[in-house]
Image 1 (cartoon, rainbow, N blue to C red):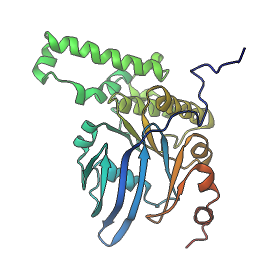
Image 2: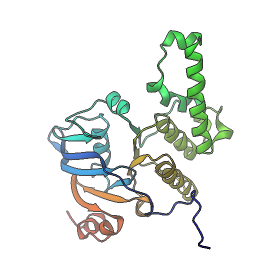
Image 3: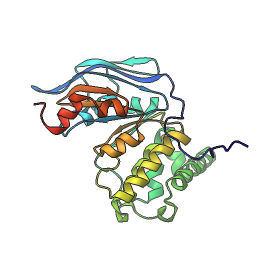
Image 4: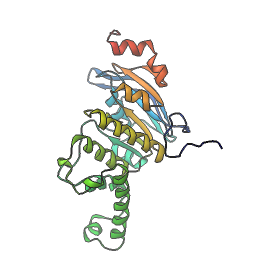
Length: 272
């Protein structure tokens, strides 16, 4: 009898990558006379983990900020699921199905883990504020439905023991999980992660890698990831785009990028 692999085991390279879901074309961004991004183009395919890497100041976070509407690029366009935009505002981006975590945590420190993640359901709540406050009829049923969704995320992230704990009392690594949970509560089709492992120890990074892989594998969520830990990037990414001084210098599989002389030069500090 031929042995079969249990479905819960993740094997890199076995998942099916779909068509292009997000297409970034010729994005240029300047602040006064300072060019943050120059003619950047790349795409993201459905169900892949797409990494954006580069030295400090390369323009990685600026690129994410253009995608999710924080910044307005002077040139270029972004196409998401066939719709092309020269600019999208943050509310529109979230409504279309792009979720985002930020490099610096912006959680509600005095609120519980459950309530922080619940805030990620805001766009999906249909009842008005008065109905929510009075908890009448449809509003009460809707809240129960959203709380059930949040509880599933809490179970997924293995933070059940902290569900009623104020986020400000949690260790940094657990706060990062809550931040991820809040983004997942939006049920995004594409999840933008800005340095999700920054400041973590080795064990915390391993846990976060597992959650990112599981989000991609079990939820089917496409992930765009900025990360400085090259070991993490090379292990979990399907494709990698490399920026340096606001320009694209590499794009391909982890092995292709690893052996790209321009990328090697940039990381060794010899390209400028």
